[in-house]
Length: 427
Image: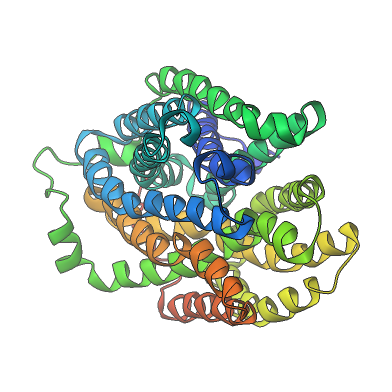
């Protein structure tokens, strides 16, 4: 335990940054967790798959906004500081969540209802586009060199924690409210909770310490721009985009979309599907610091390859087997296989990306390629999956997942071992 001890001020900063990240992702994932309930009130007169496809389209719009948020707030974090970037991102998330909480239904306001949902999701997309880069950079720069993998893994640990909190709220509401009540008004509760939590985190983040990497930069440091990123760090940016595409798509496949898949394809009821995902996410959360510590011991690349190669191999068999499963326990154990391999990526991806870029452009370098890769592949995931299901060829989606994960494996092979060549020079 002594080996992991760090100064109290730094520990408080890591915990504070992580807590804010958890709330940001709770707000983002609450949309996915409760879409099965609010889809009918915003998109009536359609079958369940069509309703989910409509909400998935707005879900994708949030992803489209993430590169814009990454560009704007990545530059902001490089220019004004990591702490300032974190504060701005959570303020936008507060606005988006509050707007969803008060959005009028189609029956009350017609097209104004789904239009409000769209605007709110755009605000959340802007927020999260900046949040990932700011929090990944902040935690990576705050973590001590020898145990950077372990402490930086809390970035994704709290990301999953946010999703798990959204699922937990869903489980509690399912226990106390009927499905009719959840569809009528209960789905608003998680967004009210998210808005208040985001406001609390905004106040917390205003008092965080700034990172030494930002403070130690020269006054006349180079300006952080997308043009400079492309001209001076093109190779790294492309590889980060490829890695993010595979990692993001896999994460949303096995956590966010999997809840709908278990309900819409496998045949479990909504509550059971929620319980399965909750159990899988608890395991996935525990795996983050484990794989972060392994990366400190054996390097970042072996952990990423475990995901890129292993994840591509198991994707199709996992889905094919799930189609025949009737036991929730068996379904959970099956999902744990790709999620365990996924932890090799999730625990270390933010750190690897931060270690690839110099401090003056690190916020933008981490955020923008990540957001673009996620927007193209993870953001369209549900539309692709549901579209193929509607066309009667859902099995094609299984191979699609395997192929995109394999692309991340190729990118990993082309990356340097950043444990030995990190551009984060401060300890």
